[in-house]
Image (tube, rainbow, N blue to C red):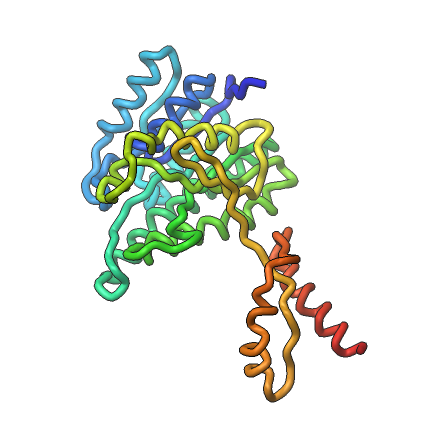
Length: 301
């Protein structure tokens, strides 16, 4: 069945170029009214201009779609709320939020200024929080919403020189996990997309076949994550036409108590690490349940 968004309204942040632009164009092409949000700043977050967002709106309108530009910084909660109020006044609903806006301030942790750590966290994590908070009650009232956090392999698996970016991107996975639980009763589905694409955010990388890493090859995954039949709590990795799932898992582990418990942990670390019966927990309480079951088994034996 063809994925369509007729009658739906989508907000895409950081949509003036790269992945966000592709997401916005694709949503509009399939019937959505699209809010193209972009501060228009440099890759490191400096500066700002509405021109990039307006250019994408012009592209959408030229193709027969409907869109509006917005230059709010996602770090400014009041500006984000004003954007959402403007969208509601114009179109009366918000069905989709794609938290895509981001910046880079790459340096090894030893050389990184704390200000550069804070700013990256502010844009990626708090930016997504501000936008999500501004639409959350609207989606709850509608009993419908689709939200995507843009995570990264740098957060999921680490990447040299990106302690700030990786921390922010993994934080978004934690945010997604809880919001998916809290949003379930109102059919608000929350997912995370981990893209690999050649944009200005990756232009310094060497050795990649850049022509194979077009951002348009990631967007099909995004469209599924915001569709009516979307999953929820999925971490979807995407790039070069390839799609994979990432999971946060938990092993069954082992049991160690007593004065030599530290030594037992050390001696049994391979058993603790054994992935043969690992699970993907439904919620954080699963860890405690596994641990208490081991304790119960120990005490009853």
